[in-house]
Length: 338
Image (cartoon, rainbow, N blue to C red; front, side, top):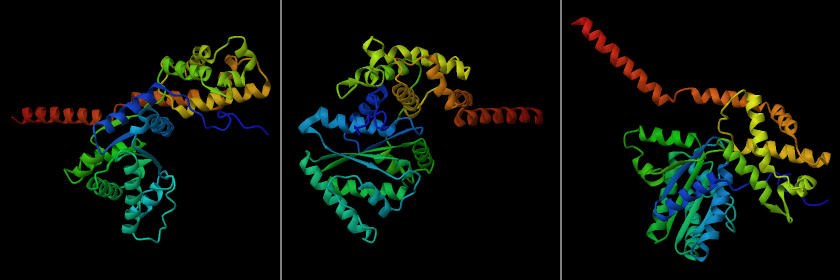
């Protein structure tokens, strides 16, 4: 059996403008010497893919001047105690080994600091650490990261944390701000700046994503050419199908403007059309192929729901209006009393 194509194995990504924007935010945070930043997005938007792109790009662009780059992926939806956090944090670090849960927290911290110190010394005394699914972290966890940062800085090694998570990471920050200074030290250290990662928004993003399949190669064939060799040989491009696909989305959803879509949703649709085309030995996908998968996923309904949610005012705006209305009622009541 031959090796499967990255699309068939669900392990591919197309570099998108939003990934570049995310990477620029990471580099700004690093270049400014900040200790950390938070980046958040809805689930499936492509946060983990953006991390993979950015972490590789740092090493590629900076070469010998690059910091030690580490990526940690926390288990989703779990609130960690400090010991559990350190076990998760180090799970994917190269040559680190495994922390045993029966070891004391102090010994765990010592092991982590020793590893980071060695990595930092080898890379210009600088470390850049991405932590994915960071919304799972508690204030205790962040305090542990702060301790590690302080010890490293004492040893003249700087570390920058890129905390990446779902929208609840933003809500955690807002909740901390509301505690009147209780968590000010954490906000200043890790959450002084923020960035929202977006999915695909509008026709231009879809066109750009489709076009990537006509350019990126695997085994000397573009992604489009691999799945539709006959059509591609005749000069057909997936980028030319972007308008067809966008029209299908509008027809199936009944919307004139299509709301933001996640990277996961788009890759799922394209993967289905590509694999079906390869199996049926079809020369080129037609409009009904796109419509078929959109219907199978009930995607038109999902887009309608999403559009209706976008029309609902944000809680902050509603709160302001309620406050204004209450103020007006009080003024009216006072006038009557007078």
